[in-house]
Length: 166
Image (tube, rainbow, N blue to C red; front, side, top):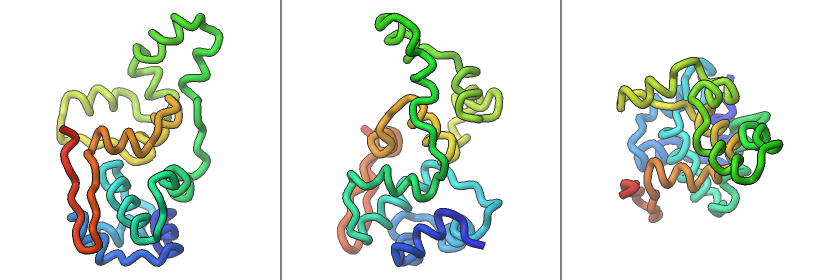
């Protein structure tokens, strides 16, 4: 059974082998992400896969968020920020950027203490679902967030170059 990512790639007639070679993800991994519901899709995988697929489908960067919505269903925008609406404007400013890890984890359905684990171990990775729920909850632009975390992706018809965020 196809995953939402697999359905998206099929719908847009994406060449998985080409995407795989361009972004450095094995074809086996991309096939697993496309067909196996037990395969965990990480944010650092979704970003280049979707960016390259959209490039070849003729989609613009402005359509990236809509593409995410086809893969990550039932998105709930503002879930974190909206909880601050009853505060004064000054309190909203500070509360927006100083929320506890527990509040964030609970709001987006992330396992308890995962943020601490991500901080403590640079090899740990956030899932695509976690990053997107966080961005949606904080009303952040997903593509800009991906670019700031994982770097820009420069495409030509033959090659992909992911530039570090520096």
